[in-house]
Length: 263
Ligand SMILES: C[S@@+](CC[C@H](N)C(=O)[O-])C[C@H]1O[C@@H](n2cnc3c(N)ncnc32)[C@H](O)[C@@H]1O
Image 1: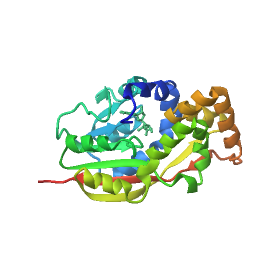
Image 2: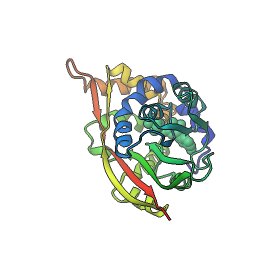
Image 3: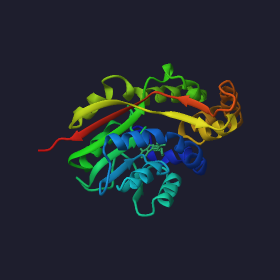
Image 4: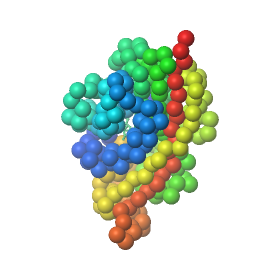
């Protein structure tokens, strides 16, 4: 996002904020639970979630006893995050310029919010962590070989330049890429973990509506129109309907866990 104006993010990510919060974000809950567990998030941890979306991860961290904070570029998603987390300090802003003081947090998380195109955000995460503080970020893994790759295919209806940018964004999932970035930014004990990630939806219409609420879907919708996007997403999902079971799309996701070095 460094080359883009972050204030434009809301145009895509915020336009169907209630759909995103209720249909899309809950489908990501497995990775939140796994990363909170691996980071041992617990009572009294001051936790910041970067690119927090509509704040479900903050709510789940609070259920473990953490004191939540968050930042997201979309005012409409932040409004929902605040509604879900009235006691948390949740700000509208750019992940490259965090609003908090140095060493303000014990834990920082980011769920598919940090990309190959946003390395400076990792330096900011390092700055706001206490020495010894823990970080956990997730990124997409090898999407093409994922059984649920079909669920992301409608994003490829975006214009060619946008598809190129989407590919650059997911580059952080390549072996070694996240490890190098975290080490360059001063993190130690960097570990790469597999993160459970499976989207489930009741039927193709719900899937299409959930997908259409995301930022990359908006890039496709700008190119082909909302009707064509929904039709294609519904058609693809219909090929994966299973009798008596929800649609399920398992997608490879990678987590990076690390610590800020202690002096
Ligand atoms: C893939 S979503 C992740 C949302 C949420 N963490 C989740 O798990 O569903 C990416 C999020 O990054 C936010 N975002 C994009 N660019 C940003 C920036 N420069 N600064 C802060 N947030 C940004 C979007 O508004 C969106 O909520």
